[in-house]
Amino acid sequence: MSRASLEKRPEEVQAMFDGVAARYDLTNDIASLGQTRRWRRTVVEAVGAQRGQRVLDLAAGTGTSSEPYADAGISVVACDFSQGMLEVGKRRRPDIDFVAGDAMNLPFADNTFDAATISFGLRNVNEPKVGLAEMLRVTKPGGKLVVAEFSHPTFPPFRKIYTEYLMRALPELASKVSSNPSAYVYLAESIRDWPNQDGLAAWIAEAGWEGCQYRNLTGGIVAVHRATKPL
View 1 (cartoon, helix red, strand yellow):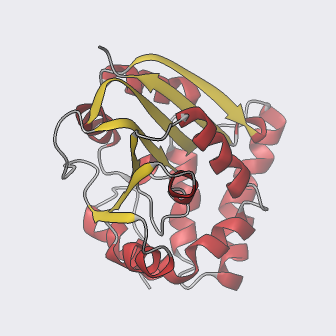
View 2 (cartoon, one colour):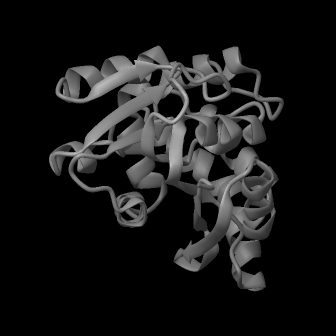
């Protein structure tokens, strides 16, 4: 089975996620020690979408992150470039609008969405800054951006323990349940290589978003960044 490298070639990342699609959600729940669902609830609260609004859920995978919007009667587009992930999602939730798309060249018109969000997917984009700029383009003026991504624990002793878990325990744990355990070696490497909370906030501002703030979850293992498109 394939795994991507930190060069994040799109074809490698796509093939890797196609390979883990069948058991992706289960593996994530186990590897995160059950925290994934709580993190996703925080994202939905940060987006704060209302009926009548339209939300872009980018890197939506099988649509797990899109379900709360659909269940609340909010129009949501689940966009991902892994056909394997989309196929699993369509079978499970045929009521959700699944669209194949590249984060660096989104198949949507300017000013289409009231909010754009991406959970644990920006790290896998070949050029994250381009992805942030594309999300800005397709969001209406005054609309929201919400990014949930793995980050850097704020307590230094815990940060060291967490890094050891990522590089050693996570791939071993994933090997028990994942259809492509080597993909979780990439996951660990990509998290360790990702910028810290302030670094990502700077990227978001550089892409043209305003008023970026972030909230640390689980001691900084995850950070949720929120910003607004200028009017």
